[in-house]
Length: 157
Image (cartoon, rainbow, N blue to C red; front, top):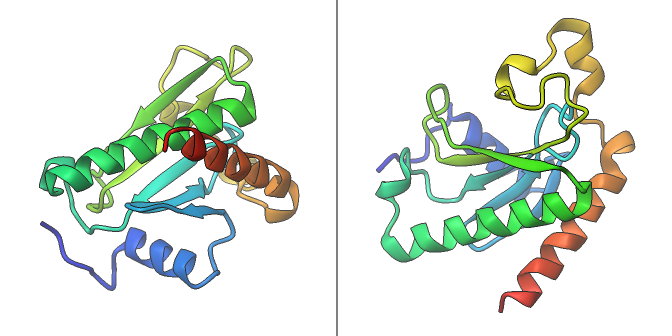
């Protein structure tokens, strides 16, 4: 299992979330921190950052793994409710950042290519900056996802 690394991007984001510095902080959950993604090209794109610094899902203890997957599903349901999307895409890659995190992308029929994977559609350069997480623009969406997340969690206990 991986250990906390000072140069780990996810560890830094978790530290920011714990200390109120993450601009996209949705909520702290049992196994991770739910945050809005850095790009909001796919409006509502969110990530569940694992508190356990594991590289792979199977490295988590069984009960933690089950809870982490439940919380990923709860975040996804909240994103779906908040965005009224057509479909959700889930990704857990870790090829670049070796710290477990799940991406949840709301997909719409109005996406540039609704059947294609998200990563090839993300804008670059100036267009990417226009889609960057903006607390002023994205605050209402963040609050709606948070509200839906707590409603989902309340109905599952």
